[in-house]
Image (cartoon, rainbow, N blue to C red):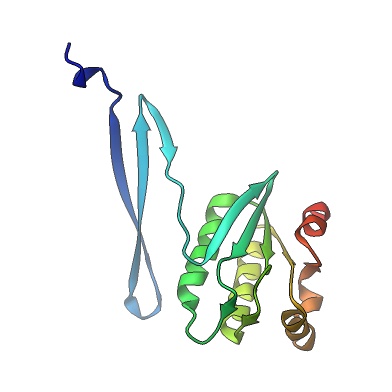
Length: 159
């Protein structure tokens, strides 16, 4: 038996998942499943706008950017947030740690996320808002709709 034949075999299977958006546009996600000796492991999804961490049974989502201005890819943010909902379960903490500016479009996506979670019986909590963002939530009365905590530890304990 040659040396090459003794090595583990790694096979990549790719599945293309598509969804139709308004206006007839299609978005395709390429999902790669690695198979090693009969075990299937889903490849970790790399998000561009958010980072995702599992803390016990809570999915903690953090924004990568400090500013979500007019040049923010709102549809990309929506896609990533909804992907987290589809893959990671029932309890989601959205942390605004380090975020200084958000537009009304981004607030709209947070509301869309809340609605999506309500549809599937999930829970959303928000945390770590700077005073400017907390004031926007207060002025728009969104602070009455969302469960907002001062820090991640308090939000995690509230689940």
